[in-house]
Length: 258
Image 1 (cartoon, rainbow, N blue to C red):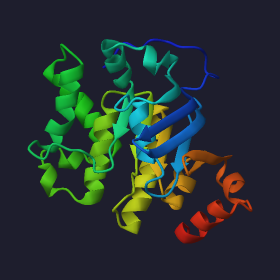
Image 2: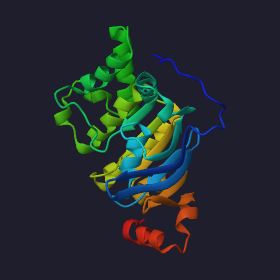
Image 3: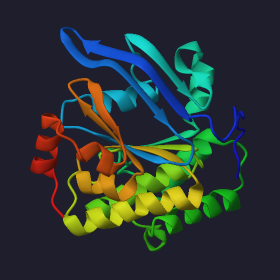
Image 4: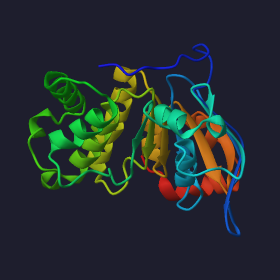
């Protein structure tokens, strides 16, 4: 099952490019001129405390919010130049794993995956839908739960199902919003491993929005530290946290244990 994909650039082009991005709500300045690039095939963590603008950033990336100033280019397309049809087509190439998984509790595990597939890809046979659902569930280790109701799943299983639902349309980019929030330590380890496995298996490029340093270090090649509306430092985990910058040191000391 394949959806039509517009080709862009070459393998060296960033799949996401953010330039001079500003966003405010009334008198509250949330993003104050941020710049960021996501390379093809990499996982990038956007780290920061609650209320620093991480979730606002991810909503801007999928067009749920509009920036006050600045440009966002995704897969070679500048968001503010797209009409509604073009934006919707681009969104199909981006998988968004919500913090609360955003599942349909009225539907079964099978129904949660088949619904977005049949809504967005026309003229699929029943076998094609079944095969796609089974492949996505198998990828996240939930194939044996295919007939269950979502309310019967544990928190970790619901998180896995949410990831499977984003994968079923074979996105080129994955956006994870606080993937380990509210999970016990053992389940966090499992979800972190799953994020890495999905990158390797599906060759996705991902942004992981998190305040969990263990998640960031385990799943991502690069870290972007968002504090006070700006990216204070970007680099590998070691490059970001081997610093004398007091705000970053405080974040590390408060959050991280090995």
